[in-house]
Image (cartoon, rainbow, N blue to C red; front, top):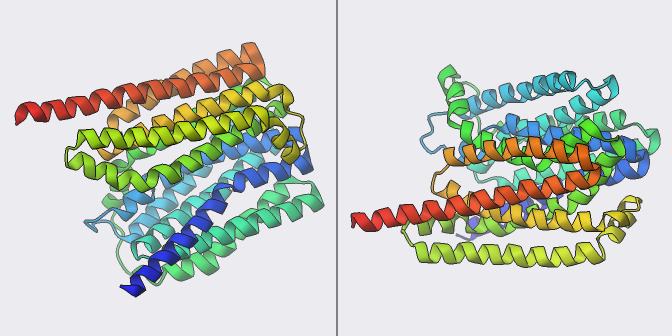
Length: 416
């Protein structure tokens, strides 16, 4: 028992350290690029990194949760690795096609390709992390995340400081990830993988088929957060991309805090639903919403009174004119996070197809809304579009989840 507790603590501490530092990597990269390369170059980095993060979900596809919870053991670890190899190669093909369709120049296309390769390595590592997690070695995952995140930021800063060249700096973090992948990740994973097992083609296809809705929801969910960035990329100069990326960054922090708040309660949500305890399920949902709203109110006050000044101190750009825009972004992020709570509830009750339809509707709205408003009102239009998209997501999820839960429980009461 004592040994299990020690292992649990190691897993928890290293996982929090590793995933936490990795989650803030984009923030550190953004600060470095804005300070050293200027707002125009930072704009290219922002949209390229955002695109890489979206395409990343093509790489992880069904995700580590599907891999770890595959209890029947019909699919081998080797088959998961082969499947992930295919999906990560697909990431690179997609970003090349995207760059050609958008008509980017060679420099911008190269940045898109390199940052997608960086995220592709992260996506491939994730399947190895799944194997380690299944064998209760999550602390190795945390150590891997920690080393990659720390060395990437340090090396990126040093190389960019010396060269002022984003391409060379990005290549350096790719090399860091490749080295750690080979000498640390593979070394630890090979202890648990039987390389002699045969790979079944049907199992490779099964992963793609079974995980489609999970992938689609994750992919579209990240896209709607970034839709205004693509409108800015189409209609405005690169420096606007940098500014929008900076004022949206606090919303990312709210999202990370929300994950830490929501994840510990996921099993409880499933348990209450299985026990058909609607009263306590609603209480738990309201408790989570209250915490998010409270955090959102505090964040909104800080954003309005101190936000531009703090961001100016960090990035070296005068953002006082965007004070109201920053406040709107924080409110939007709070609404979106409440929607994520309801999304977690729907996922717990196995409602994936309805979420897929919801995200298609929201994504179509995001495309139209972002392009029209950004073209007409420029930066203010992008901010308003962001709010409109998050508000729609909040309305759809809040309404549908409450209706769905009432229907489920009312139907069961009638059958009793």
